[in-house]
Length: 227
Image (cartoon, rainbow, N blue to C red; front, side, top):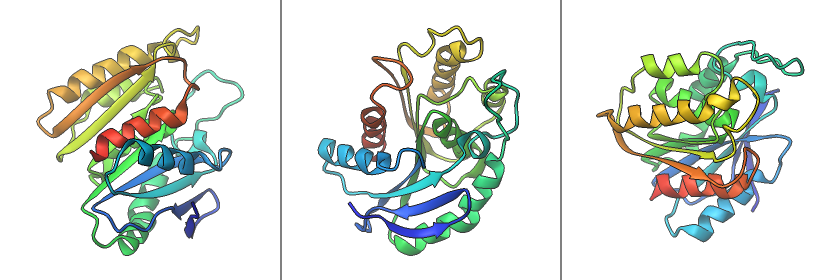
């Protein structure tokens, strides 16, 4: 599958991977270290579903900087969480989405999807922007400092669908922040279930830990949200 390079900044790049001009478009946030991830996710979704959709990849270079909504000290000496998520979200609104709309003028639904910190960013962007009709957050880093309080205090302001998933082993860690990801995600699921602005929401537990079957987990979430 050949991607069409559409837009590039120093720290991220937008690739258009399909040309269906379908009603639904998925913006998938991926890592520059995993160059085939988005293509593999797209192929897996197509094996699982006959629904036509278009697929865009936003390759982000430095996840710890660009996919965190605010700076925080997570007690990890080798990682710096710079909190540039707001800047990236502004660029999505002002630069990325105009490209998507130009390329797919007939689309009616736009979803954002990601894994780990990209899953956190996807859910946060859904709350913050009003730009998306739904989010897929797989193994989302909802353990990130301040996220639990943010989710408790923030409401959605439009009709959306939300897919959440975690690996069953993810809460089984000695890290005092990460071990709470299960209870925080479950609390968010219960909150979304009672939110009148949420059309459909699902939370799935998958076998394995954080890094198990990433492509398959993302494909399951995207298949669900486009169906």
